[in-house]
Each structure stands twice: as C-alpha cells, then as structure tokens.
View: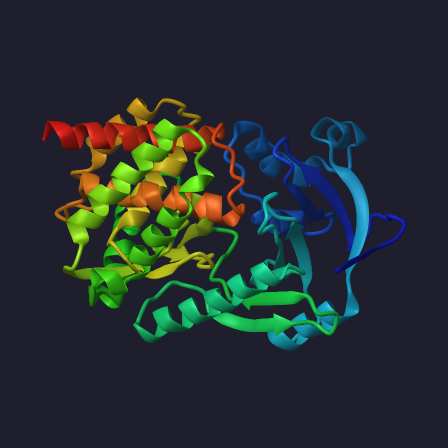
Length: 372
C-alpha cells in the first residue's frame, strides 16, 4: 500500500526506525512529535529516542546512532482516497507501524491533522487478518450497544479496490494522553464496567471459553514434551470439572489488556485493539494478562515463582473487593497458551521465554491445588 521515490526532506519525508525485535516504524520528518504518538517504547533507549529525536533528527550523527534511515513513501491512491472519504478531509498526515512480526502481522497507520489525532487504520492482505477486522467490528458494535464507554468506534471495515483489507477506528488521543504501565483504579473500574455491561448467564458448555478448552483438547499433539502435555491435560481437567454443567456468569474478555493497548485522556481510560476479544469468558481474566505480560515483556522477569509472588501480593487489591482466584489464573494460562499455538498454526516454540513462564505457572497452581 506504499509507493517509494527519491528522499527529500519535506512534509512527505519519513525516517525508517527499527528495533532489535524486527519491528519497524515510519515517522514523518515534519510534525514528528505528533507522528511519534504511534511509537510506544518501554525501554529507556526508546523513550529517549521519542523525547529527543524530533529536535535532533536533522543531525546526521544522531540519525546514524539511532539507525534512522531517511525514506520517502506515499500511500497508494485507492487507500488514500478511502481515508479521505472516511475522515471527510484530504488535509492529513500519517505515521506508520509495520506490525509485530507474526502470522497476523498487519500495518497500523496513525492519521493526524496538525496536532489533532484523527484515528487509526489497520491494513493487511491476509484473509485471516481480514476476518479479525470483521470480528473486531462486531465486537465494538456489541460493546457500544451494551453501553460500554471509552472504546473506539469502527469508522470503516472492508477492502480497497486493490483487495487489501482495511479497518479504521476513531480515537480520543491527544498529545497529552498518558500510557499507564502500572495498575490503577482506572483499569479496575474499566473491567468492572466491562463485566457489568456484558455479563451473561449461560450453561458453561455454551460459552466461548468452553469452546477454547475443547479446541485445546483436540490439539494436544502441539505439545511434544510429555510432561508438559500431561500438565496441560490436568489443568484442563481441573477447570472443566469445576465448571461442568453449571450455569455461569461470564462476560467479555479483551484478551490483550496491556499498557500498549490503552491510554488515559482527561482522567479516563480508553481501551483499543479488540480484535482477539471474546464475549463469554470467566470475568476479569484481563487482570492476569495485564500483570503477567508486564512482568515478562516489560520487566524481563524470567522466573515463574517471582510472577506468582506478584500475583499473591496483589490478588487481594487488584480489584478491590472483587475476588480473583487461582482457578481463574489457570483459565487465563490455558487461554494464552492455546491462543499463541493456534495463531501460529501449532508451531509456537516451547522454548519461547513467555511459554516457559506460563507452563511453570500452571505447575505452581496445580501443586497448590494438591495441597489445598
């Protein structure tokens, strides 16, 4: 969806910035401070780049140090015209994130006019990702109908003339928006509202979560290590026997409730990227995702015992008076393992750092069940 030509430093010029994980951003040379709103680093070097590069990008030595490559790109005409129609203006600029390398990799475009953020556009030529866009559209419409506030509106979901899938959403983001890397009452209240607005009483066997467990049970061949496969079977048996044939009160699950998918604006939490959401899961599993992913991905914790201690320390205060239990943590871990294996068509590495933590946490929780 991009065309390139000879670079020149004007309002259509970009810098290509890459990190060690293979992620790539295209940041406009003009109005870069707004363009960098798409860049959400967690490390010190990335934060320094975001703070200082808009002022120092004209210095060639600085560009070499941060490995910022001058490039020139333009959106293909069919996509540009589509975005002009969606936002009712042609007077906008953009920055771009080329996606996290994975089977569902997609490009995210941030559109802005001056200092004002207009919205975000996700694009992909993958039919699988196109279906995710359609599911996200349905989810957002459902959540809006249920009265959920501070979520995006789907402005467009479809394809360009060139048969590229496009999903466009609104945003409330400003230059003053904050990214929250710590748990606060804002996250708590959002999840309480999500549960209250979307809770359903269902037979367990009619829920999305039950279907996840059944699918995982069908694909135990994903796990070549016999001990780990047995451990996952035991965890599933524990959860299935706990819920079997019961009427449950389940609710919507964001499924990627992390700092990089939320922002705080005017004292309110705005949560986006609902493409993996489920509508009938055990309540508050997003709590587990938040602190587990922060520990593994941001804090670099590689010891499951330390993550479990974090859970023990905070489980009584994460949601105030609302109880969260070890069984719910087990549900979350089974979901996240299933999710990554399914997304990678069964080829997710069991040597992956996150997987090693998840499987060790399951072992800890199962040992606790024996002792109780």
